[in-house]
Image 1: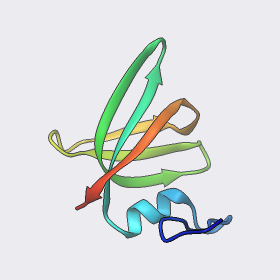
Image 2: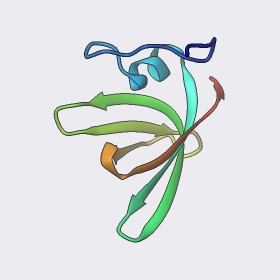
Image 3: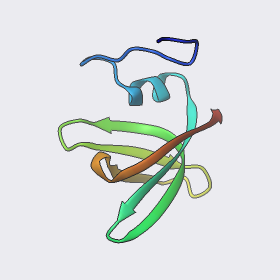
Image 4: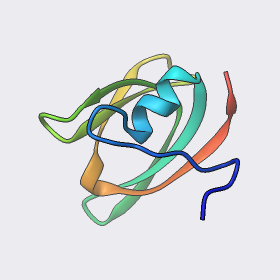
Length: 80
């Protein structure tokens, strides 16, 4: 059931494209070994060929590459 918070994705339009195009700040929790880490910022790239996303950290201003398979949770913080 679709509502106003739902949208469809396909091979050409992904969730990461949606975040990027709408300048949404997201919080990504991901695993590194047995530890859980979090980075908050804007999507700065989606790299499907290596199954990774880049997130530009809000405070540090540098890009973090996060393997998609290691993502535990993505939370939309708000617009930029």
